Image 1 (cartoon, rainbow, N blue to C red):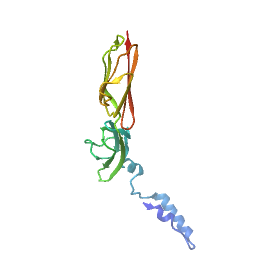
Image 2 (image 1 turned 90 degrees about the vertical axis):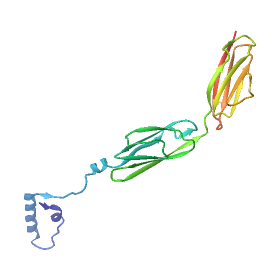
Image 3 (image 1 turned 60 degrees about the vertical axis):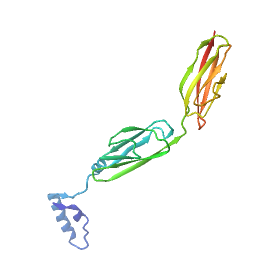
Image 4 (image 1 turned 180 degrees about the vertical axis):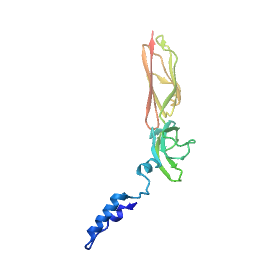
Length: 211
């Protein structure tokens, strides 16, 4: 076969060239032109490319003690590694794992293909002070006689301060565990508020009926 590129780029600079060009044109039209392309098709290169398709954290700002999901996805990878390590991971189009870092942490995902080519991405989760949360709430009675003692008790985590009304705290206002005590004369709503180091709050309320 004859390579068209050689003939099409040929330039004539003297007489008689036109006749030669017509002969060449006749030959190429008879035997056909070919162009050898030794490159890999673009679509194939794209399909085989190593890629991290997604890498994110569901809660980029995370209170200490809380959980979040770290999700990733890769294409054409035979190996993946997460630093710092949380658990063993493997190549997947979509996968999420649970994380609960105690301090602000940058996670790096590395992926490798069969040719030892690698790619990586990093993401940071910012850990804030723990949120105050009630872990237990109880009331001595939901219905009492006038002047009968009522104790609204709680246990909490992540709290550094507590306030409540009406009444008084039996242990002076311990943020971890205490009881709001009162002797209501009429139906009364009680509220306890705990506050965390970051000034976040959580509330608990209950109403006691006086007969």
